Length: 259
Figure (cartoon, one colour):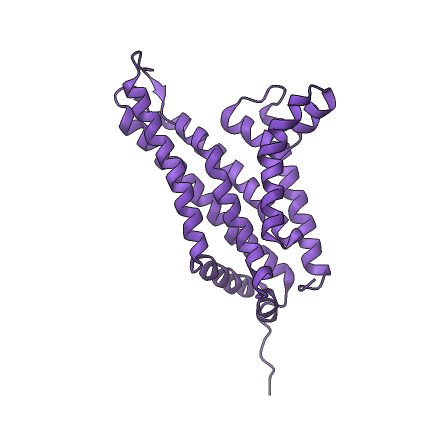
């Protein structure tokens, strides 16, 4: 009797991605994070449009896409939390044990969970950024413009920033295996340290702030980080995301899941 053929890696990955997708969207917390990001991004977009229309000297011809970039800064934390919790929730509940029994190939689980969590958060962020720009334009007509070329540039930048940041969150989730520790770490490197370090007035603290992912994201979205460039910001975000993913993967494949 011929033994059944082993499952193909692509098929295993596809089934694991489908399971991760179902798991992500059947958890109530996912919808809370989505609602928080939507309120922030769409709300700020509408406010920006109304402010432009009510200005005594309206900014005639200004692109409404500015609202997309500005609103992405505070909303990023809801999406980062979504990606992080998608990884750490299994460790908090002990569900990682049956998960690895169902998918014993840890590399497959790592790839599937990372793609689904980071990909979903990034896609949500881009859609909300689009909605923020459209709302700003609708509320600020006829003073605000909606140039397509600038819109593609802004949405592409938002997509890159959110993809790198959520990949960082996924990596930290696998590395730390703790929701509170992951959220504190993200809050420090994305917000607190990039703002705090330059205040000390030393060259080395300023240089340290420039290699943090929060500074790279702020430059790409707002362009208000002296001493940084687009290239350095991109490299900073890629370096943090890649390093976190590598360390998270190393811990997943080498350490016991319950440690």
